[in-house]
Each structure stands twice: as structure tokens, then as C-alpha cells.
Image (cartoon, rainbow, N blue to C red; front, side):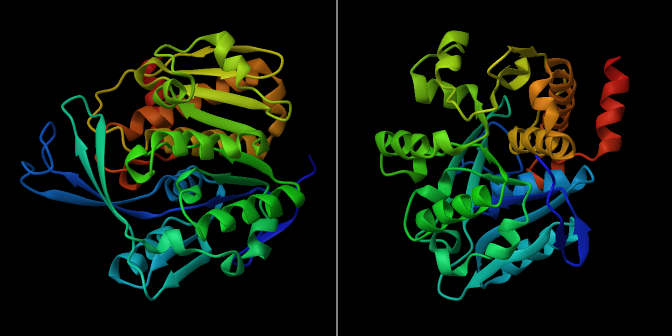
Length: 333
């Protein structure tokens, strides 16, 4: 695909990655392995999967922009500043004066896995409308990345579908990480239906092993079933397996890439770091989607980014830069 010429904040770019969706504040307990009620205190950590991906891209030297809606409140303005401080274009960010920025309380179990409690009733991100989209920015994307949380309610669902359509028409690669958060959906059935409703639009899809189980009913990742999730336009399906690495599937090959061993304290943002690293490499050279050896090298790098993110609390504060990744490679050699 010939790269388009893009300008973000006055910078010429032919490799822009635009993330669409929610940005919020995660409140993470200062003590692991306790319930929300028992937590002695909370660490305020900016998050929201699409925003995490944008910052992950930027930390690794890529060009990123975020499209979404925040509350016109202290947290909303803080989040926009965090995007800017991390080199992410906030041209696509708007504020809602009538709704608050979303909050999520995230309990960390002893093994670093998470449970969520959300405050969105409604939050500003849910109220983004088609007419508020920065279509000029979206058309500049070489990769357009999104999740499924923005499909839960109107008007954001229609805005999400419109943004995908505009990006696709402009020649972007569509990247989809459903990022299942069941407590936000009216029912599990609705979640599955809506997640699958845009499945066949994507060029690249990343799901976790838990999401694979949710979508297929299988507790272990079966290659044959995974391949059945491929659709004609899908260039790459990835299934992340936590500390067991990831599996990859294309039309021509599939396999596994092992994880890096680290001491995990919080898995929040690990998948987003993985996706950001992957997209950063694809945007430089999308021929890696056709070359298994190249893809495996990229996925090893993405696994390292995910691993490093689990060693610190919170998502955005933990996202690595290239130097940290290279150190992990050297330590593992």
C-alpha cells in the first residue's frame, strides 16, 4: 500500500496511526491482592485501551493521534495534556460540558490480573457524535485502530462506524482489539454480537486468550478454531496468551512466539503495549504481514513491550520506550 502524506500538528508524516475510542482514569489499589473495599488507597493512572495504544506508538518513536471525547473537567484536561506530553496529536479530542470523564477502579489480584468497576453514566466518551469527528485527521491515518467499548451505546456507536468507514475509504489498514469489558455491556450475548458485528471489516485483529474463550467457548486456543475466525480480508489474527506469548495466524502460515519472563505486578496495558509495538512496525513496512520470519521478529519485540508493561502499576506510566525493550532483549540473550 502506498503511504499517504499526512500532516499532524504541522509535522509531515506518511506513517500516522490514529486510535479511536475511550480515554479514562484508572484507579489502581496501592496494595495488590485485595478487594476494592479493602484497598487502603489508590494510584491515579491514565488509561483507556485506544489511548494507551496511541501513547505506546509514540513512546516507541512512531506518529500517533487519538480521536475521542473527554469530560470538560479536571480529569479530561489532564488526559489531553498527557496525550500531548507523550507526543500524541490531540487534534481529534473534543470536550463535553455535560458529562464527566470516565473512571475505572481496577483491583489487582495477587497474580497481577485485574477486575474492573466502571463509573460511566454516561461518560463523555459515550456521547461522541458523527458530526464531532475530525474526518480530516482520520483520512490521514495509514493505520486506524479501535476497540469495541465504543460500540456499546449511541451516539458513539454510529460515530465509531462512520470513522471506520472514512478511514477504510481513505486506504487505511484497520486494526481491531475488542478489549472485552463485560461489566460495561447489557449482556454477554449483546457483547458478543456487537464485537462480531465489525469483525469482517478489520485487516488486523488482536484478541486475548480470555476473549478467544468468550467468543468460541473454548478454554484453550485451538488452531483450527482460530483459523475459522479468519475472514477473507483479514491479514493477521493474533491471540495473546499472557506469560505464554502469542499465537499468530495469516492466510499462509501460523505459529507461536514465546513470551519474556518478568515479575508481573500489574497486567493493565500489556495488550495495548503489544498492539502499539506491532502497529508501529506494520506502519513502517506492511510487507511483514506476508513474511513469517519478519512477523515473528516483530512479535518478539511486541511481546517484550507487553512484558515490560506488566512490571509497573498502571497502563500509560508503564509503557516502554525502545531503550527499555533493547535492555530486556540483552538480559534475555
